[in-house]
Amino acid sequence: MNPSLLGIPDVLWSVACGLIATVFAVIWPIRPRAGGNRVLNNRWLHPLVWTLLAVSFFLRSLGDPAGGTANVLAFLAGIVYVGFVATLIAGAQGGSRHGAPR
Image (cartoon, rainbow, N blue to C red; front, side):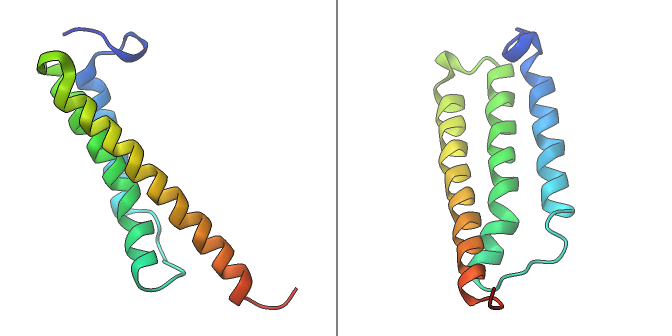
């Protein structure tokens, strides 16, 4: 095994990311506060980010040639994470506009 990030083998990073993805898919958020696509985005985009990272690290542990596919998956995870954060920000701003008066 070749060490990677912080000297920890890629396969261990893959397992850790997979466990985090499972926690976010099963436990968080317990009660969605929004409706429609916002619930779908808030519920599944974050676990998707961790799943993409897990697969990326796993491919690196297999010796993905030049890290091409692993790099694409890691980049895609970053894009999905930006979408997740944007959805959270939009939900927070939308909640303040339609919520109780201050």
